[in-house]
Length: 99
Image (tube, rainbow, N blue to C red; front, side):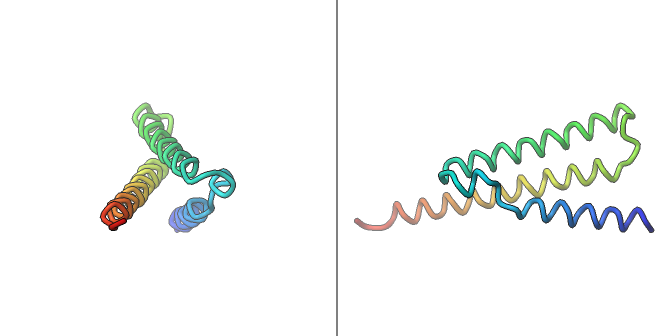
């Protein structure tokens, strides 16, 4: 039962970290914010790959950490793709606007 509570706390902490805006996004340009988001998603994906490799080699015995890393990477990627799709839709709408 303690394992389940620990997983719930880890998910809440991860969700809170994902919601926080990065400092560079607050001060920089929109382009910098997008670049930082892409780098962050890439890093999360790399972390998930490392967790999988560590589990495969036996360095990590806990499957829960591997699954959490994979789900975090999946959610981050899905969010990035949703933002990209919204940006493309907005761009297409602007391009259709008569001048």
